[in-house]
Image 1 (spheres, rainbow, N blue to C red):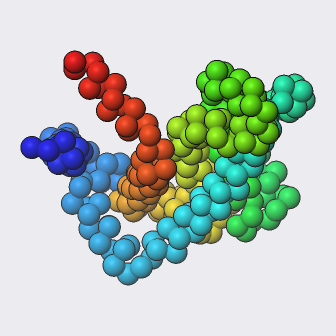
Image 2 (image 1 turned 120 degrees about the vertical axis):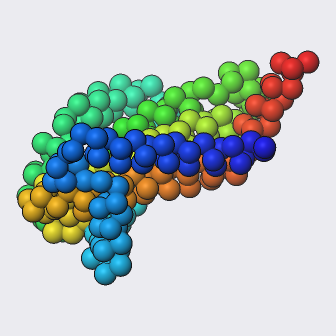
Length: 263
């Protein structure tokens, strides 16, 4: 059996076992449906909300907030991270402010953002951007400072301009850390969108979960949670696929190390 097939079957087998245990525990312990619904009732709720299209605007709203906030937060983090990595002076001024901003609980900032930007899309996008900024920023700074010093010195010995050192040496060295930051930031962006919808929103999966909880419609809540998990897995898979195509030399280095270890 190929490694790719094993990788595909392993999570599928885990899912089947989880569903069987879930159904068995609901039957054995007799848990009321308004606390823990059976897999069958959740599947029926899936069919209902997706069949009549009720959930689709909420999925679109959460996805829009997540993508826009992620793009803004990650782009700003990339630019600021490069500047901080290249200048210790800038780091002394900016880094304490960034740490202080990260230390603030984002749930507490959400009502303030709603006062500033209203109940619409912008407040959620800003909240998402703030949440996904810090992990991306830290990975960018760490990645750019992990460049091999001997290569940097070699380029400087040949009087290479600073931008060439940045593009030829530091950016390839930082690529793996950047993509790792993107994965973390994207998952946190999804969580940030849901937090913003909990605070104040009439659309989005977070608002649908809140409305369903008031009606004790637990199967629909499970549908929303599973949908969020699927969105997170899809987003992470897209980033990992892009990483395998862009940072292609990491796979070659891993194969070379494995071959040398076997020898």
